Image 1 (cartoon, rainbow, N blue to C red):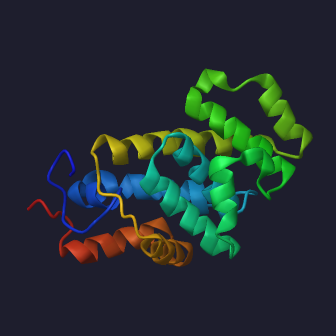
Image 2 (image 1 turned 90 degrees about the vertical axis):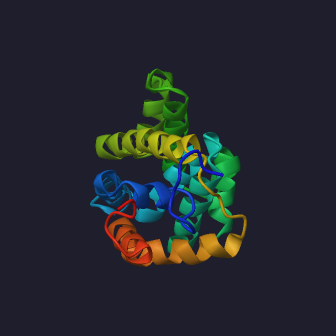
Length: 192
C-alpha cells in the first residue's frame, strides 16, 4: 500500500505522475530526452543502463519496466535480465559493459566513479558524450527509483503487464505514455 493516496490502478511511477501533474511533465520530458533523444547510444542501450541501475537500487518496478522496453527494442528479453544481474557476462558490447560499470559506480555514489572506469569505457570506444549520458541516466534513475520506492507504489507481479507496457513505451515514448496516464485518470489533475 502506497504511503500516500495515489490514483487507483496506476502502478509504479505512473501513480505519482498522475498525482502530481506539475512534476509529471518535466520528469517525463527528462526520461524522453535521456532515453530516446539524440545520442550515439541506442535507445535500447540507454534502457539497459536504466535497467541496470534500477536493479542495483532494488527497484523492481523500474527494473522490470525498463527491462521490458529494452526487450521490446532488442526483440530479446534475456539481455535485460542478464544486464540486471551479471554485466560482465551479458551479451552486450565491451563498450556497453564498461559504461554499465560506470553507471553502477554512479549508483553507489558519484565519487565512486574512478578514472580507470572512464578509461576502460574510452578504450572500448565510448565518447565523452556517451560517458556524460551514462552518468546522467544513472543519476536520474537513482532519483526515479527512489521516487517509486519512497512512496511505496504498487509493483505488478505479472510479467505480461511489463511486456505490454514496454512495447507501448518503445512505440510511443515517455511523453506519449504521459498522455495516456492523463486519459486514464480523466483529468490533468486527478486530485481535483
